[in-house]
Amino acid sequence: MFEQQVIISSLGEEEMELQMFTIVGASKKATLLTRADAAQLRALQETDLRFICVGYDSVGSWLAIDLGNGELFFCNDEYRPSDVIRTPIETVMNWAPTTERLLLLTQRLKRGELSEQELPRKRYTPTFEEMIKWVLYVKEGLVTREDVSDWAGRVLQQSDDDLIVGMTTDSLVWLNGIDLPDGDSGYLHDESDLDEWVLQLERKIDEL
Image 1 (cartoon, one colour):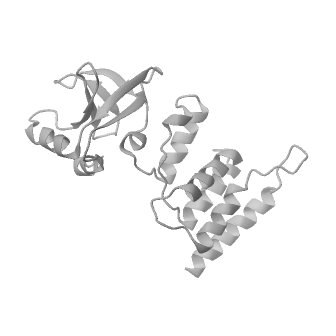
Image 2 (tube, one colour):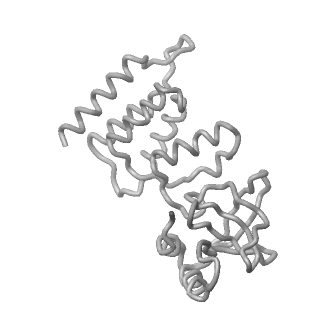
Image 3 (cartoon, helix red, strand yellow):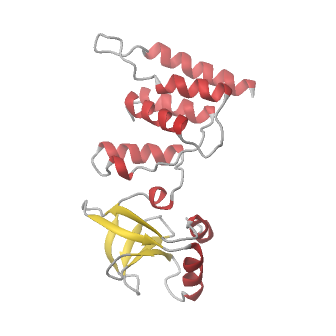
């Protein structure tokens, strides 16, 4: 369930154009409403309150969000959908995804259900527990080492926190190097190294 106030507060003070993709891969351009316009539109809405309008396209269709599942779609005034959007709500609203959500989006990317440009760009600084999850995702075959390296690199470059320092930085640098080659078509860090990383991260948790 998505809170309407969270969605409205995520909109800007000015309209913003963005590109997204439908479930069949067609490109769609839309303009996001301002925070004030979205709030006013919501206040006037009398029916289908499970949907909220956040934008519009060049032919007059609304861009709406299903508050139940976060699905985006273009629709008419009666909320009858014309195009369902595959681009994640986090990308459209510029939110940082949770660890579990980012895992799902990474898997969708691998299956060809999303393009690289559709992944959310915003990241937050992960906890040590979340870093452990990413190492375990590799060991369980849910993601590749390259996926984890890319994730850690993006966190180091961009985070909701103003500054990433100390033990957090060191740990993210480890994960950023998880895919380093060993020169023989393998990886520099083997499974035992990953197990040791998990232990070290658990020790960092105990030190907090």
